[in-house]
Length: 336
Image 1 (tube, helix red, strand yellow):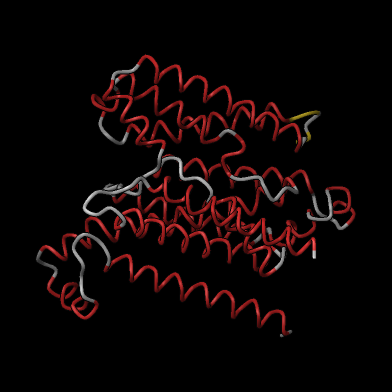
Image 2 (cartoon, one colour):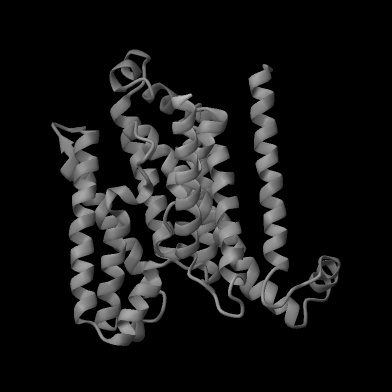
């Protein structure tokens, strides 16, 4: 085993330890602080207010932060590799716009009141899936996927969906408008255990499947033509990875709403630290995204306690600030 592989393993273990520490912090922090020493007793007795808070609120939020953060981050890493553009993120293809438009339509029509709360994540995933379908088939040219065409179509669909959503917001009532705005800001407050289980399993499955394509992604960094010379079926790889990334993004949006910047800044920062080899970048991106969203959730729950900020506000402020700082440091190094 080479020195590079030892560095990779050490870095992955460090991220895993940080995720574990942040997860423990997430369980203890909040309006009601729980002492670390009392955790074994609480889980042993399985009774009392502390156990109810942990089992019904904090553990579900922790699982969602871990899975959604990881899924968005590896999706960003995959799409940045496909498009050869470090500024591409999961929402660039209009997936979030399609999901938001579908959710806004459901809220305006009052279907969430008549059919139950599960109709909102169902509508979000349906809108995301329809957007994926449109982007994919409109980007096909002579049975080949044109990457630049796909990106442009995604951006245009995002603009159209945003316009449609603004129209729905302009004709909706005050209560519906509040619901739409709150959903678009993102939230990890999801009590449905089935949705949480699906999100956790899907994110881990997405990580495992994407790791199988680490070498093809490394080949695609050289360009599609060179990847074909190396024996890689570029079109098939891009098609499969696009479907994986899109479905993961659609699921994240359906369960947690629109949570920005995770898929943009985490792969970008990690790429500058450990390089662009997808054998380590994918697992590091998953752990880094999980860590980032867990910390953001803690801040959202505690910064103005007992009130709570939408997690999308925290990821936008913190992620945007970190990204600007990283870019400015990179520019200074280039000047020197």
